[in-house]
Length: 483
Ligand code: ADP
Ligand code: MG
Image (cartoon, rainbow, N blue to C red; front, side, top):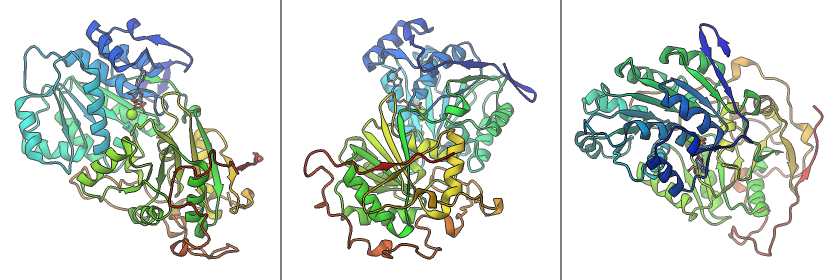
């Protein structure tokens, strides 16, 4: 048992080596058949830990590394309990709240897959989509609502969504849902739900303050923790940092993509503006590139993500709008063009690769003055990132200045990328010196080309992403850094 103030969590520790058959879990034959059809052979440790607890009416906080099947861990009990609704009541029985519209769609797809053979109706309530259709769907009756807080609030205000028959509420990506950007909406929504409901929280990162907050919304929750706080990031991901001068980042990105030839890659940028700019410039250097952020119209977001899922886009330049939850098996590389300001965001970004036992690679670009952010990440994941070097971009990895920065210069956590909510949000900009491109600093480059004039001298690549002469030469050099 793990004691936390007045709240007690019983700790269910599993290891990744442990296996569990779905047949050993309290699941119906029809669900087992659906799992077989989905190709799921055995339950993952988080599924083995969470499913029996939820089915025995427990409130649960579930923590497991990215890509370990947390979605099915909460969907299977929902399906067991609320599918084939005999009474055919119209009000939803379960509500799943997620931070982005794309994740809501993905959860719906998983629910459709796992509900084979059952009568189960799902409504996705997200902003950027016609509300009329959502209202009609709710009127005709659904068992499950999956939504982003903003649009769910909108339906509550209109009286088109009724929460009185909700038996279960799930916060997927719980730490994001309870951070300062979403928390007021979540609290309003939870107040409308019956006191007797069950509450389930899931994430790869459950910081202590979320555990504490959970106490306000849950009754005697059980903590199902598959990864300890020390192994928060999946060990299937090879994680490197690349020390680079800000004005050479774009050239390095092009070089890296040509060298590594990722099956698919996400390039994470800090701001929407950077995302647009890098995507635009990258399109002239490599093929199958797209950019995506929360300011794009929803139709464009949907179109781009669909192309990424089907492989028509191979390199997606994006903000953290797709940093959480998105599951695309082709993603072999994650590149942090801008180092994340918050170390848990790092865990989620790199967790877009190396999922379900597949291997993946993550590179984080670090400029000299960003060493403190790198150190924070390493502390969070409890491992050192290895320095990687690329021909023509050699720097001394020890030149990264790791001296701690003054606390007051750190930006406050806000949600700037998703537009699911109707409430006004503060948009804090990080200090200029730590924004992507770090342009507040004088260049120390021997070749002081700016990013906007980067095309000269860039490694040539015929605008093609695929290897021109067989296997790419791996020119990375790795150094073991002293602790
Ligand atoms: P998480 O939420 O932990 O990041 P997801 O729920 O997105 O992970 O699952 C990752 C992938 O694994 C998805 O493609 C999902 O369909 C698949 N998956 C989930 N459970 C199983 C299982 N038991 N066996 C095989 N694949 C699974
Ligand atoms: Mg997930």
